[in-house]
Length: 411
Picture 1 (tube, one colour):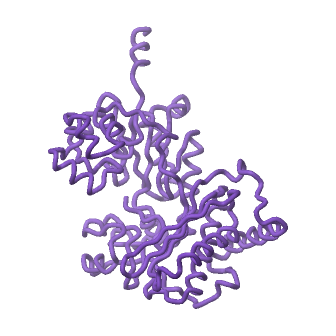
Picture 2: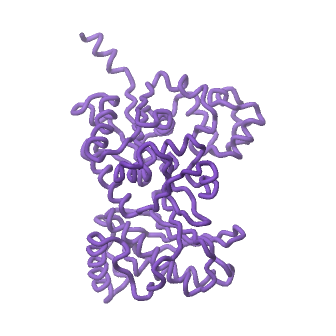
Picture 3: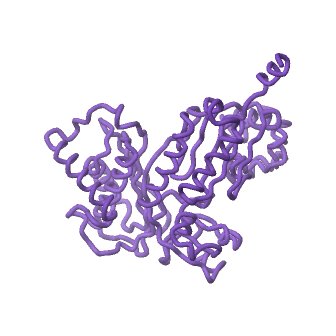
């Protein structure tokens, strides 16, 4: 027993899991309306400039993918069923998913509305090996929320994410530590997160098409193609990467974007729309119990010219009024550069828990008033929906003709 036990202790546990909801937005809509099951369903805007935010798996068999123009999706599937997105509803269900994960695993890193990394090594004593924990989480999400999910596991976050993609739809794949390099070797280099089309083309020029071939490239040649990421990618290909939670993590952010059927030419109307977005993003922050230190405004004209400007606050905030002040100031500085606006977006970064953030003094005597007002607004929108309440300064047409593309779901 001692010899066996000692041998077992030497086995490296693939304790990093990546859980990804399957076609999250579309799956929610199909769950809520079972008559959609088995049909080519997409979530997105139906207008001339609408885009696909999520596609059901029957739609994907027709070649439809997220971020695809809706006009293209319609050509591929004339019988396509288009469902308008419900951002607040998806965020509420996302919170329920994350609550399930946190009830089982102490170390959870949410990446986006529909995916998270988990370090399950500390949960083994209560819930078993990573395979058992993955099955437990997927079963609970299915039983309690009626939604499919997929899980990948490895000793590395990057490999866990690749494994979850291979497990889709509605499956799981745990890659043992000793088999990591073998698992990766035949996969295309594009399977590695962060290796985009330009890097793929550059790698192919030096004869690298599969991940396993990276190991045979001299370090200097690899560095010329991949730059500072070359050592990280080599470790991945060799199976020696052990990046876990909390390191080399993409900056978390919250935000919303909208593309309009008709270009906006009235500066005051743009100001009204981005004010509404700021309030929407602030509501997301308060729902998550977080505050943000940086706000970002994105603007795009019909010719594709895109301007992205950011402003860092002196104190982190979840106040719509505070975010509004900053995005409007950014707009006023840039409005002369873009005469027509096709797309606008508001995003916040550098997030932290509202419980650990310093007390906000930015609005001085107005802070309590705005806090109470926005609390009342949250209560109203929670009960009656996001469209039930808005600022007087944002009153306008009943529909703004926007196609919301928040957090496109491509998985």
